[in-house]
Image (cartoon, rainbow, N blue to C red; front, side, top):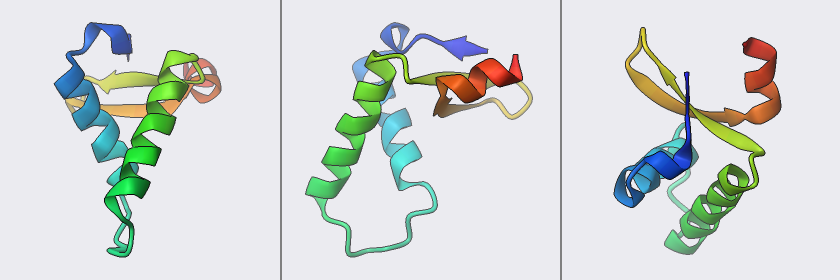
Length: 74
């Protein structure tokens, strides 16, 4: 199920995006600046509808995926 990013609080949205960009990133050499850049990039992708937030009811979790991949799944 798609969740419009505009219906999520700023704090929750940042948490979802931050969790997404740091997932599987075990390289501790990344700086906070790189993290902020990644967060901005994903936020811009959501704003431009290139990516969407989806909620998985079975896992009770949110994920961010490319809009084109989401459209293939529905």
